[in-house]
Every structure is written in structure tokens, then in C-alpha cells.
Image (cartoon, rainbow, N blue to C red):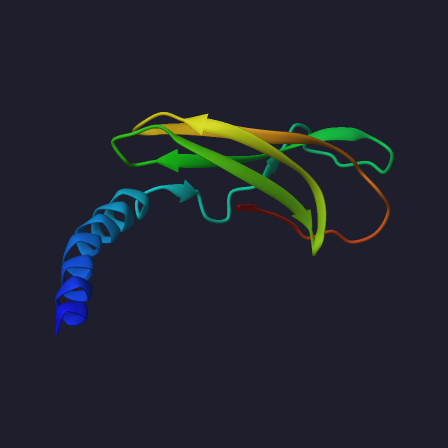
Length: 108
């Protein structure tokens, strides 16, 4: 009986923390489908910057690590601090190689 009481108290106290954290981070993240480059014309051997944008819709600064990919190959990553209600550009340099590319970014 005592164990049941202790587990009930733990659940009671941990549930609000989880809910508050989830509500805080739900409005933060990458802007979907937004990848752009420092040059309009991409030429093999050229180095360009790959950009994306991250948004923090919460009340506190968030540290995010953004990784950039070409298909499933990681091209690089950048850690950024995003202040409350801030939209911030994130970029890495990329030396363009031959072939077809599918560039994407995600938060780790």
C-alpha cells in the first residue's frame, strides 16, 4: 500500500513538469522545407553555404544542434542559441560534388 502511495505521488508531481516542457517546445524547431544556398547557381567544386532557419516560440532561450544532410550523409552541424520568439538562420559551408543531391536539416 505504501509503495502505491509513493508511485502515485511521483506520477502526480512528474506529470505537470512533462506537460509544461512539451507545451514550451512544441512551438520551436526548424521551419519546414526551408533550405537555401548562398548562390543561386550551384557548380561542382564551388563552396557555398547551406542555410535553414530555426524558431523558438518559447519563453526561454534554447540551445539547438542542427545537422545538415545530403540524403543520409551528414555534411556538418552547427550549435546555436535561439532566444525567445526569435527566428535565426543557421548555415554550414558545403563544397559541391557531382551527382544528385537531397539536402535536408534536422535538430538533434
